[in-house]
Image 1 (cartoon, one colour):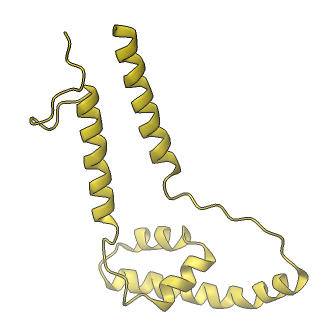
Image 2 (cartoon, rainbow, N blue to C red; image 1 turned 90 degrees about the horizontal axis):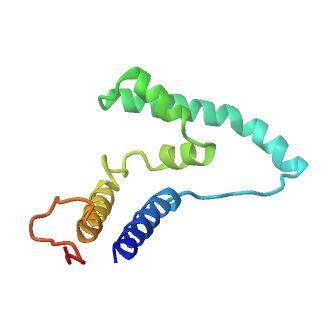
Length: 129
């Protein structure tokens, strides 16, 4: 009985870890032709000016200069174009609600399994001791 319970805990924790690793990891691959490579060179100056503009806007909105530089440097060229086009529409903290809900669900599952005791109204699923 103890072996089954520990196996259940291990399975649930493994599933949680794997789910958290694979959520939101997009993958892209493809071949580039000569025309696309030449077009990329002309767009690089546009991208660098857009990066500078985005960094300036972040600093104006209260982000530290070093943090703004790091954030802009971590963006891909496609993300820079999207942010540049829709900077005024983008709400601060967008997606935070999803992260909070995800963490709450993970804590509920770990409470049900018996790893944690965060929520007092949840009792472990197998309480046969």
